[in-house]
Length: 440
Image 1 (cartoon, rainbow, N blue to C red):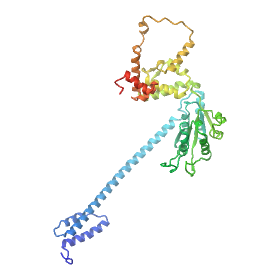
Image 2 (image 1 turned 120 degrees about the vertical axis):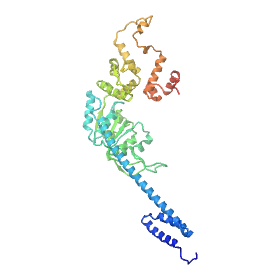
Image 3 (image 1 turned 90 degrees about the vertical axis):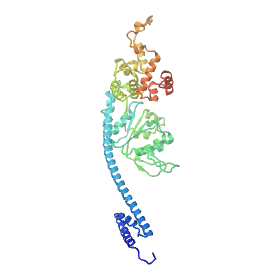
Image 4 (image 1 turned 180 degrees about the vertical axis):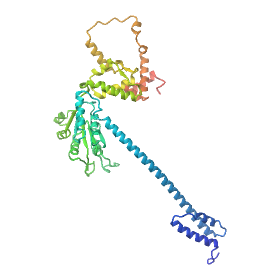
């Protein structure tokens, strides 16, 4: 075919069709693709034209595939968006339920305390909860200072905001400033911007636990937060306003600390707008039976055990113990007893050794001196009314105790060792000797 010779009829038809296809491509109409492939099969179509037509056809196939993929992607996106919306609504509903549960749990009316000293604290807590005044909570370790702080938060106008708790005795002094006030990006290699705990507490409550252990240089900056309601991140110059309520707690005598120069007097006055002094457990022993019932309900449920009863003698031990660790020590003792007791009634022998020794000492002091009775030559009579469990060897009883503790701890040897009052290595050695089949 010469340069000026006319195109074959099929080639002319093909060119016209290709022109039409180019027009259709602009309007996203791909319905002529099949006709295009039919023309390329014609033996009369010149090879260059056929090759061009085939290229057009492949382009159309790819365009149609792209549109199909886009439709599939849009369909998947719509389905995912719908699923996310359903999840969002469920999360909002769950969040509202959890917040409602927190408000009910930390309501002053639900906190255990029928003693006069505790009722006074709870009445004050209820009155000041819905205000924004700073509160200083004092009391020995384990008296429930954080519980009162949460009651103040979850019954206030800030209850929908965050409750940020900071243990001032647990933060290294070198990290105190960045933890509290945040840090700007680029202050050091690899450091990214991070909000501090003070900034995170915006709209809610900042709980400064053990504030008596806060370094003096940080006390000055916390004072500025209280006075100016603003914070500047480490390495930054931007002043960031913060809207929060500050509740502080300590087991120290801050008045004595200020006189000794270890605590700023101006910060003490800023914090001590309202002071709540929590009584130690030994000064409200009438609350012990109520607390025991609360902790028994909790830990029996957690360990899937029926609710245990307390014998009169065991209750006397609970009531007469000094409880230097206060409510926290009492709960730990209940948790231990629930895990280790064999029967459905808590008896004196189920309690920790120091509680049993206190009871024995109290009984010996209360009784007049007597001559020791001679030991029976035949111990069958003295043992005839004893349960067989007490006639097992020491080794057998120890093995049973370890098995029961491991079961209560769900097989966690670290927790079991803590419940037994021994080290994990000590437990391993005992298991190697008494339970070789379980010492893997």
